[in-house]
Length: 121
Image (cartoon, rainbow, N blue to C red; front, top):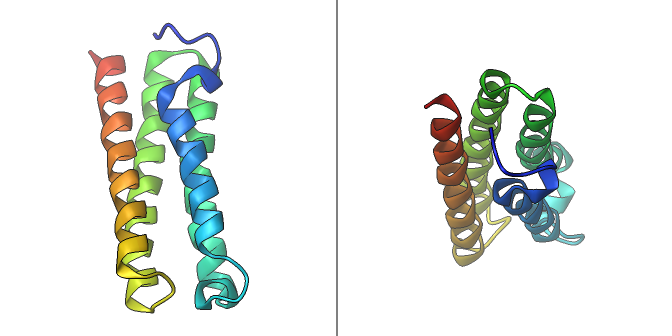
């Protein structure tokens, strides 16, 4: 399946963890994104879902199950990117802040897709 012995060894999980931290930091106290609790929590949940689905899939120990959970992680990564457009449109984030976060999320999504393709080949 993979040379990783633990999900923490996976580059995609490490990048997902970094994304969670960046999302939480971007919606800091005193910003519109922080005061819009429903929006903030949904964006945070979506980012955590990416990380957790990678971990859960890895722990399943079968390539088919792992690939399924990576599909879910990739979907959540798309949700994060979509919500970052909303954050930008509502001025919760500046255009440059949103762009940096979206670019990182898109890179993560490509990494998840590549790993999924590897598992399915």
